[in-house]
Amino acid sequence: MTWGGRWLAVWLLLAPAGLGEARAQGQVAGAPVAATRVVVLTGDRVTITDIVDIAEGRASIAVSTDGMERIRSARGVIDHYIDQGLPAYGITTM
Image (tube, rainbow, N blue to C red; front, side, top):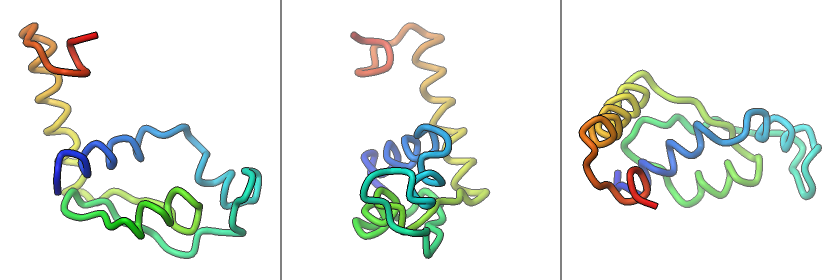
């Protein structure tokens, strides 16, 4: 998975709570009736189709145990940069 894919996975996890559920229940304009599949975020691969289906409410997400460990590991890198005062674009820069 590329860094872009990793950031997408993190964004999907941090997206406003309930958005997917509201979309699936037709409470968001243009929403489909219900999610029909689950995209499991493992940290290895997310397809364009997965992204579109998630965004349009046709799929919900789940995070595998390995995927969650990868997120924790990536968070450790961010914490290291912050703790050490190291420059990191978008983290310690404005």
